[in-house]
Image (cartoon, rainbow, N blue to C red; front, side, top):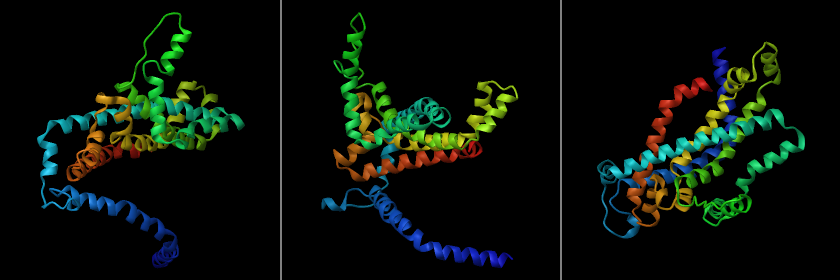
Length: 289
């Protein structure tokens, strides 16, 4: 019986191989080969493309530990990722619940359109749009001064809150979509059963809805936290000098300084830190999911 099962499994794998091969080939070419090249660059003193002599070194990784600035910026980026993820949960989870359990028909379709609208526009367009809203004399400042009987000065540009606003706007759709899928899968009869047994709306939310929708929360948090930690466009444009984070320093090494070996080393240190955090949190995430 076991032999027949193993034979069937191998036969199924052989039949599925032609369908799997293009995807895995693409992953190999588009992900693993560039990563392999960056690993190679991170151990070099200079790029071979520059025509200068080069050698293998650990100095690029040692620079992270010898200069406290990199660690400070890394901690600031981790804090930024946690705060943006928290705000996305606060904003996105209620929106997903309304979409899944309250709205029906065309109203749901209209809200869905608003949720995915950021994906239809270029990232730079979204960021510069916020710059026009948050700057002094911008849309927010002008609107409030036109409504209020007294004059106020709203200028959030080049500040930490502006970076948070821009990142939350960019990534909150991931939380809405992932939570919507899990909330939509919850049978309404379970909620009605809890209510019929005397549970309040808050108790139903805490004991039924949130536990069953936890896989969507976990998936959304991971999809948001990982890219936000290494983000550089929103902090660069909306934060100005206060928007200097670990991701902006990495970008500087590749674009401004042209020190690719150091930039590659800093990138892999960030990747290692994120993987360690996910590994440490995996038991909790596994129980939640």
